[in-house]
Length: 426
Ligand code: MG
Image (cartoon, rainbow, N blue to C red; front, side):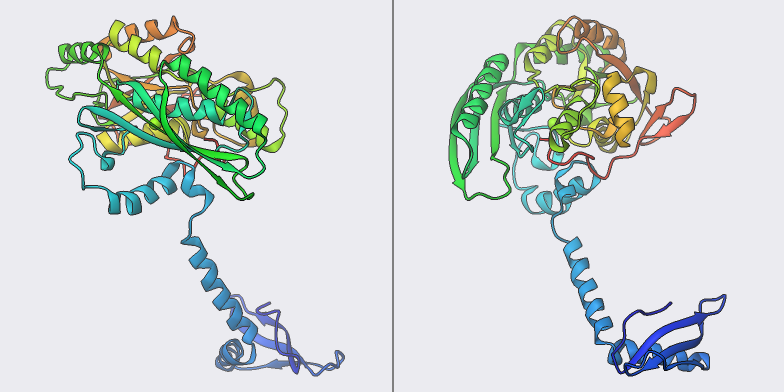
């Protein structure tokens, strides 16, 4: 069948095609008399001419469809939910639009275009992060705890200690004051955990819509510490060419070990269960927490850390691919070493999700010089935040990209995900 629509006076019914797809004959009816049907065998060229004329003249509906298709394709050029979901779609948006227009105009030590977890300007680590998690309360956390932890962890990923936060709140008309109070109390306790305070901010209210209660921006600044200096000194003892002043993505080199500070997928699955009303065998709770205190102690007491990144949207797969792209080294991880809670693994299997691609909010991937990896791991295992830590792999010059040695003995390429499978997780 070629077409299903046609004008009422000559209604096309069907065509019969040969093995190459060319029409051999067409069947049509005239007027409203359904009994009057006619099948006409025509030469191929006339059939094609018929089709063409019908498309542009006889059937304006076809033309409308073509135009509509055109509009649909322009819709593809608009922002979609994937543009905020980590992965290749979001990173392309950041590179092709945000960095294109806003990058390259500062003399920051770590500028926007480095696309690291935070920037460094005037020896101050500076980070801004917006949070639009849906729903605003989920098992194990809420938007307030998430906002404080997200910004604190990004500052901590450069080896700095956060010392002030700024909070921009956008509240939706209709949000219960009791819910706002719960969120603020949660922010207060998370700030105490992290040892940092909110010093300025702003509040706006918008009409009832699709915010889901509220969204917020959390910016923060961090500074150098004695623990960071001590860590860099240890790195230099093992790598004489090391000249970086901060713990940066770009510092990873072939041979470095990759440590994951705990189980993956917990946060994404907890938010998904709240979004969809899903019940798993046991309640899966978000891992959202500030990691700055653990990180400062790790840098000071163990040291040898060259790179850190929190695997948020897009999960471990996205974070490791980002390291690999920036440093041009390959990363090999070992499946049996990647910690995943059994209930998270089961839930992912049920839902067809890959835990490597699901976002986390209380985990850090840590690149260390090989000689210090075990000591860093031993330190992490003594802490509540890092008790499930593992050395999951190493950077290598053998290949580019990220691969995983699987339990069955083969190697699987871990591609950068298109986007996190769970929308609005942070
Ligand atoms: Mg980050």
